[in-house]
Image (cartoon, rainbow, N blue to C red; front, top):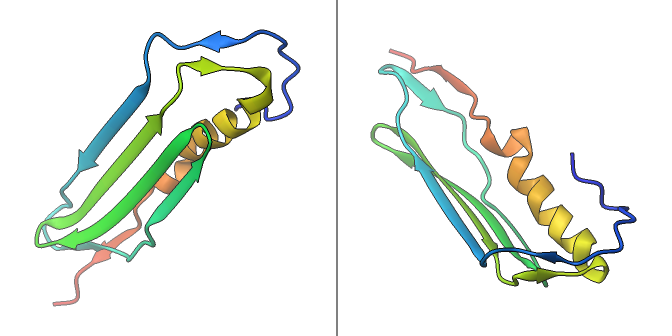
Length: 102
């Protein structure tokens, strides 16, 4: 877990800004995902987006993480950790599926 109340006094210099995307598609035949609400969290450090769109094959899940500053300072650790915690939150990565009624 990320500690939003960290006492680390040093700066963190990322090797580069971060932009990560993942798209996952596919459910077993005869199954469908329960609807999910899209989510977007943004702050001074960047943005995390989760979008869920039903498709013919099941569900298209797109995750996006953008950290737009290389230099992270103690003054913005709380915002950085908020984005990283949201990115790692298992609830954002879980789809509930059920059989399609025939």
